[in-house]
Amino acid sequence: MQISLASISAALLLLAGADAAQSETLELAEFDALRAIAQDQFDSHKLNSLIYQVRIDGEDVLTEALGHAMTGVPATPDGQFRNGAVALAYVAAVALRLAEEGLLDLNEPIARWLPELPGGDTATVRMLADMTAGYPDHVANEAGFVEPFLANPFLEWTPDELIAVSLSTPRLFEPGTNWDYSHSGYVILGQVLQAATGQPLHDMMEQYVLGPLELTRTFGFDTAEIPGSVIHGFTGERGVWEDATFWNPSWTLPSGAIQVTTISDMARSFDAIVGHDGFLSSQSREQMITPFLIGFGAPLPGCPSCHEMTEEFSYGLGVMLQGDWVFQTPSFGGYASSVGTLPEERSDKGRITIAVAVTYTAASTQDWTIGPANRADETARLMAALIHPQNRPPMR
Image: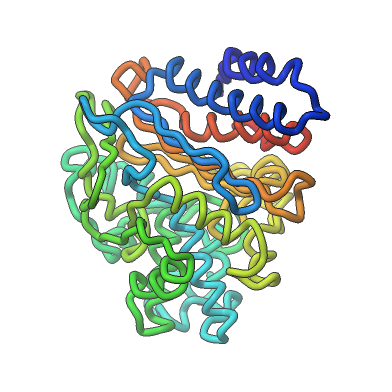
């Protein structure tokens, strides 16, 4: 990833000369430096919108929106966008809460709930949650998914259809023997949670996550609906520049976990789930954010995302672990976002959470067949490095 030197230079120039003994001046300089990073990222990458929020110890210290929600309509901090894989952390949190209540054993084979599923006698709930179960990702199946999706991105996919595409793909490794990012694994996990409780996942998300965290601007839909003030997403990945806002997201997540949100709900929720004990018990949060998989996994022919887990990149339960930071970085249909938290026990500057969401213009990249890098993630990491240079997240 190429990092704009202008972003770093602007931040350093604003901080230079600030008297460290005068906390007020330093704080003002930091705020100005963060705004400079956002503006430079917005300008240099020709973004259509950039919305961000910075939270310290649970308090919103800086929120800003740049650009447009759609042509002629300014973006605002309360704009709605798809939160994508951030909801994987919610799904994992639901599983952990069910385990706390004795309703689910993360180490039990999933055949107990899905007896007809191949591999279910050795794949466990935990393996689904930490992406080691080995179910091939339906998103990587060219004939079964990619071609139909590009032909009709408004097509609605059912969980059974997505799982069928996964099962039609040759398995590359046995459960628990490697790591591979798999949308299909989480679709299956959603089915397990529903079978274990007899409740729709949508209801469990409301009961265990959205309700307790008072995420009043986060809504779950299994359709392409987005209510309220909509931030539109645009993409050229099908060879033509188009509004992809209402492409059907049914293939991206388990049914019941497909959501739209705001930057504040995204930041608040991630901060509460991974940043400190309380929402989850200490034991559950430890399971979620401890890099137990470091040293596990290896490259495998035919598996682009199979690799060894390292301190720079490992996976917990529904979250990416990078250094001391915990991240999620979704990207779909012209939307890209990133939310990262430095938990309180890993920081001498307080608990830090940064959430960024962006949309693109046609000029944001030269090759839309590849697509742009996740500029939201890039921006979040630059901001994190500014706020805590001694404990910055790795740059991807």
